[in-house]
Length: 130
Image (cartoon, rainbow, N blue to C red):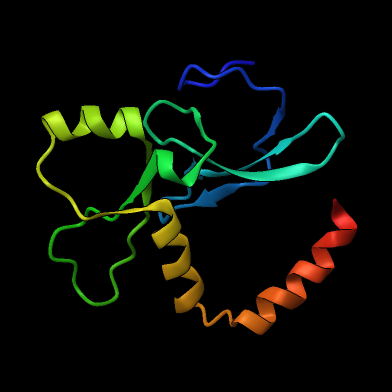
């Protein structure tokens, strides 16, 4: 299997459980996916919303929060781009608010009040899934 970013993938992609419902009842795919590795383990990954390729390393992509002047209560869905798609988008798009994927994930964890102790406990629970 080949990703949209030109990398060969040795995984099967699991998409069926990661659909979100919008207000108009239509379904959209999320950038968060799981790929099943050669040993049968589902591994979380982030898919580029532009080309569909898998972002294998947090340094090779960005999260975009591009709603200008949102009003309180506005729901903003992040857009994920691999480095290549983001470079192309910068050439044709107005400047947008973006952050690296590692900063985005820390931002999410902080805002849902996931403490270091909770992460350690969850890590211990994951050891049985490997």
